[in-house]
Amino acid sequence: MTPNIFKAEEMLYPQMRDLDREKTLLILPVSALEVHGHHLPMGMDTFSAATSAAGVAELFAKAHPDWSVVVYPPLTLGTDELPLPGSISVSPRTVRSAVMGFGKSLARHGFKYIVITNGHGGPRHSPAIEEACHRISLRKKVAMFAPSIRVLHPYTDGRAIPKLEAELGRPLTDLERRAFATGGEHAGVLETSIMLAYRPDLVSDVYKRCEFDQPPRVKIFFKLSKIVGGVLRLARLRRLADKATLILNGLGGTLGWLFNSRWNYGDHLVTYSGIPKAGSAEIGSAAMRLLAKDLLEEVEAVIHGKMLPSQVHSLMWTVPLIRTDFFRNLGFAAAGLFLIFIVGLFFVI
Image 1 (tube, one colour):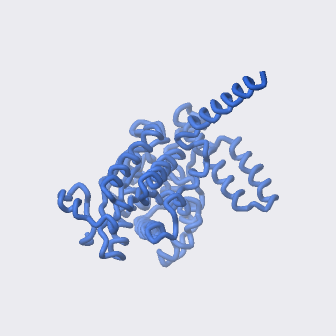
Image 2 (cartoon, one colour):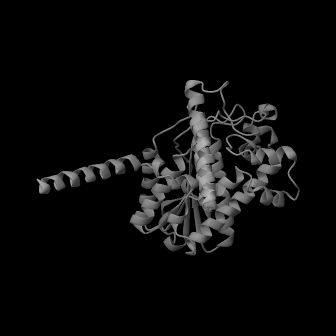
Image 3 (cartoon, helix red, strand yellow):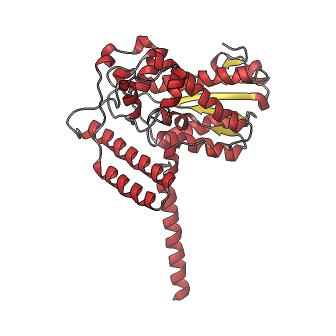
């Protein structure tokens, strides 16, 4: 390990006390225990968050030898997981509160830069983490942010294929290309590859027989996606159209997972999405290197003032409906409007 990288659980009090608060980067992996097919371990997302933390820590420490990097043990916590035996799911508010507590504690002791890594793509999970980061950043005047899902997303919908081919030094095979372009990754080619590179002893050979599968879709969201996307494109709002399409398709797929796992929606139980058999240790190693580089770019941008912590967020953060306080704030707004109405009636009468 690079000399200026420390494991928090192994540090002595004087070491932590004497860290330069202006030149210390703290990294906490936060992710889920969740069913990942029949071929990957429950801790897949936690392993992903931990490898991301280790990768970006190594690159940052080498680029900044005058800084210290402290990596914390993973916080195994997640929401919106497959409701199957082995998955541990808590409320989004619990995730937010835990991450806020971590950030508040470190900020209280003067630390300025806190990064949360995450490997779980549950629709309310990353927004809960990002909400915690934004609140601590604003209240404590620190830079706390969670770039993982923002960085991971292009690897799940095909956009990162050219970058991946350049890193591999070869074109993807037809099967590999199709696997990365299918979208909706869960225990598919990317995660299977990462585990084959990182912990092959935890991957069952069953993956070699795992053909394409995905949860049944809730069709109304996909119809809405086409309608809304089409209207926005006609209005020449292409970026907004692409975002709306991704969000609506994502919600349709997420609800499909839920209905399938709990109420047998569809013709069989689905435990993964994608094409696991296309995975390889070669692809996993390349993907981990690229993800570490992508995370480093985000960290550097925030530390050097090129990006605000509040600008680091996933696509799902842009959907107010799934944020932790949406319905509470809606209730307050409704109560406020009702109060204004009553006061108005009083003056009219």
